[in-house]
Image (cartoon, rainbow, N blue to C red; front, side, top):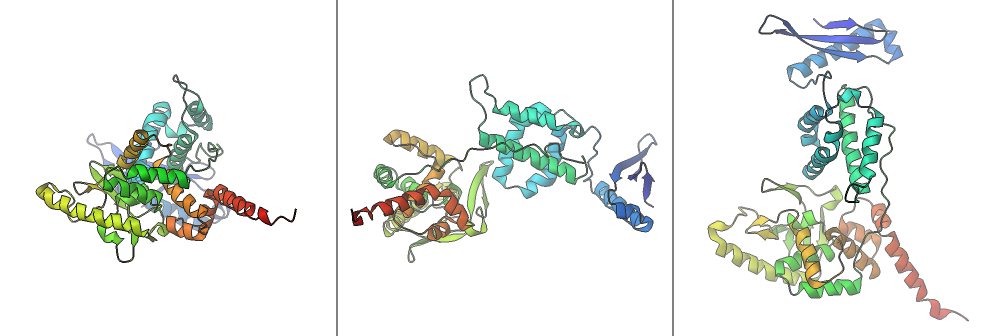
Length: 391
């Protein structure tokens, strides 16, 4: 029979009996709930049915081991519960890895020891303010990193509210750190030609990987997950159907691309596909020569290390060193993707085509990112009409 005890004006305590302990003591799990619905409070039968339903749900939570006692639950111990019961199931692997790193470095050392139900908004305001201050080396966390810290704390506190550990998130009402919007970096046509010329002196695999980003507009993870069946030499296309954004314990974490629209088929230049075919022949010879040292198994990863896809950060490291070797202007690896869009805009291509080529989920995303480029192209087009001035 349900054990439900009225404790206050609109609060009840639920008790689930767990038997007896080794010394004969009664073992029980308890939980207090608050009913805010005034209509429900005025209807005794409906209220009783509601409370019994809540007791049954609580009993099931206790029996399957999902109930978390709020007493003495520190923020750090709740993070462990959050990671196992929510984050591992709901978050992308790279997102979870990033969140856990930020928690370990910046949050748990400050509030990890505190009971989660005693954490107040002012504690979090102070934590966020400290992150924006300069450290002993004159540096502070970037605004984007501060946003990530805010996001992971918000996720954790929201789960604690959902699971009835605390009544309200102490982060509610605290503004998310702002990031000054920056225009994406990119190469113009002249700089792109310089990069391509320098790439001609590099191994064919790396040349094609970098050009896949700068000409094809592919994301790093999409390139790492690319396999030969995705390359169609007859149609001159490359199909994106998966992505690798993280390598864990030496194994790639393969998942679907960023969004549904990221699954796409991209037309590539004839010259690029000709080099890709040449590389395919080299790839086949390398696999044959490797014999039992080949680690690709049934997979046919295009950009690889003895058959295994490259470690997820390797292209970024290689790109930085390449730039330094050749004395070129540095932009991030991801900015090569912006370069692909910019080169097409300057060549007169429509934003709709670029949206589909890059796999953006909405046209407005493409328009917002490249607004400054389209404005420049529009101005240059207008300037070409100056010759018709009647003056």
